[in-house]
Length: 251
Image (cartoon, rainbow, N blue to C red; front, side, top):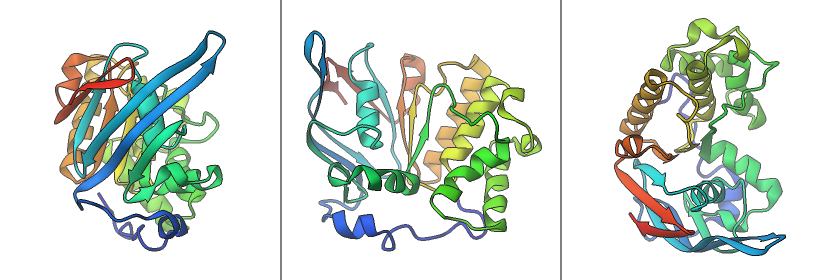
């Protein structure tokens, strides 16, 4: 997945990792969730979104997360990516105790370890395609100067959009914008790609292109987590995690 100059080592130089690293029970395990719970206070009372979730995900797995609306799929992804915090339980990713990170540390951690792909792309409309892909590198102070430009162009070639680099996002189709979002998620070479309904707004051909790209990333050693409501797409993953009422009922 690395282009020239992209083989930087994330582990060992990150102060977050040094403070919060814990021994791993198995070097193949990338994600460990222990007795994970998440609840929200609502006008109708306490709503439990996740209940005592225990889960292990290995390096290089392609995981689909399925379940009915309100089953806890998005909550689970948001906890793994650090977008939200658990009410109780523990989250270990790359041996880092994510549940112990301060809010000020989470953005830096996420920039190094997680690439997030949203259903609605969330590209910045005033930045070009190239600038959108380079943004995470600037935020984390990685790939300085021309090195960042070279890596961004490499990633756009990976998704076959190098000829669109100078365009604004609104000039691209939905499928092309999603591919740009995937290139942006890969900017800092994170080990994990987390996606929430990544094909929900795409036509069947664009969805197939995105799924093929995810498969290629897994073949190259990435771990891909995909929330989807589409049972056919879910079957493309190596393992399906099914949620109901905040509980894993099948894996």
